[in-house]
Figure 1 (cartoon, rainbow, N blue to C red):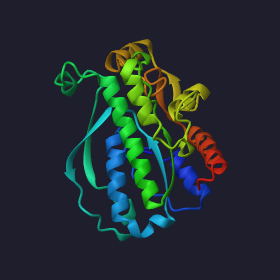
Figure 2 (cartoon, one colour):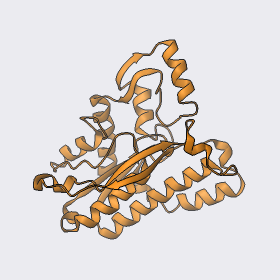
Figure 3 (tube, one colour):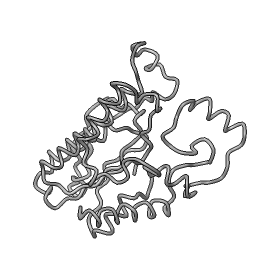
Length: 246
């Protein structure tokens, strides 16, 4: 959900007539999602049997780092929404000082894909062991170049992929396998106004290899509109009903 006032997760909570607890934060990555999930489930073990979790995985190029631990909230009414850490994020799909200091022989596409699978498998195993109902999907596109799927890289990735429970992962692959792609294909942008040619060229320079959010840099705001969130949530909801997840 991030900094938005609406999300597909919120729509799912309404369909379940459940209290909506939002642990997301705009612009952050999957390490943060996985870490905050570990912390939250450990701190709220008493209510897990009555909890349903939905996860919209972020872009694989967003790398989170912890800059401090947050104090416990003093507002007892919001204790369940307590977030554990303060985060900063750097991106490996844009020119970045951190990226320039990475090992030169690092195969960054393969590395980030493996990290993504690791978070997904770890989260699924955690929630399965805890007996928590859940569903997950890609909020942003995790695709990497086809050239990475070669030789032993392909074999190793397939080995990890087989460990993912596809019955709980909505549209893991294929057409419109992320909410971002669905939003772009149907024009459900928060602000679909086209940007100027100058702005587009500047965006292309700043976001030189970004592929996770479709049409970002071409429209004023490529995030989902409220209607886009509702439409996507309805698809996730039908998937949950078909697989008897919730």
